[in-house]
Image 1 (cartoon, one colour):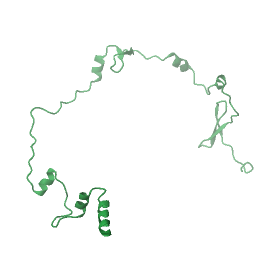
Image 2 (tube, helix red, strand yellow):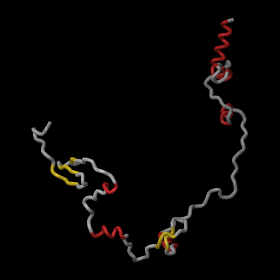
Image 3 (cartoon, one colour):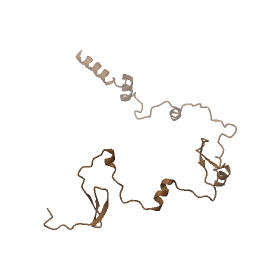
Image 4 (cartoon, helix red, strand yellow):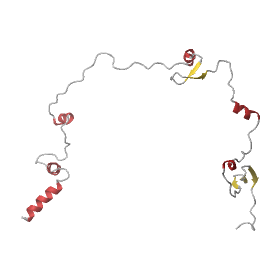
Length: 173
């Protein structure tokens, strides 16, 4: 009696994942069947087994189903002909300013005209104290260069490049 109960329990537990019928069909075959044969009932499998298959043929349709060629890209001459003298913002139709006319020059803004005559300053003034920021004890930053020189960045923002210091045996630790 105990063996029969154990056999039923094993069969139920093994078939619990996929179902008893799937378990039996995957593990046991009838005599004369090929266990390695592909399974399926699609149209191609029916043809493989030699069964009669009836499918509706694909018939040609009238007319041209393909779209025509894309329109050619406009040339610069076409774009120039379409201009009306004002620059429009990307198709939104809003005027964003006058177009530069043929033969005219582009002018710089007032800000750029100030910097045009002189050269740029070596350092910007430190305005942090004006806004309540306090500087601590800042030290000079040393950046060694590949040619043996050292670039020094001082606390006031100035930058200098000096030849590297030679280490002497007394100063080496």
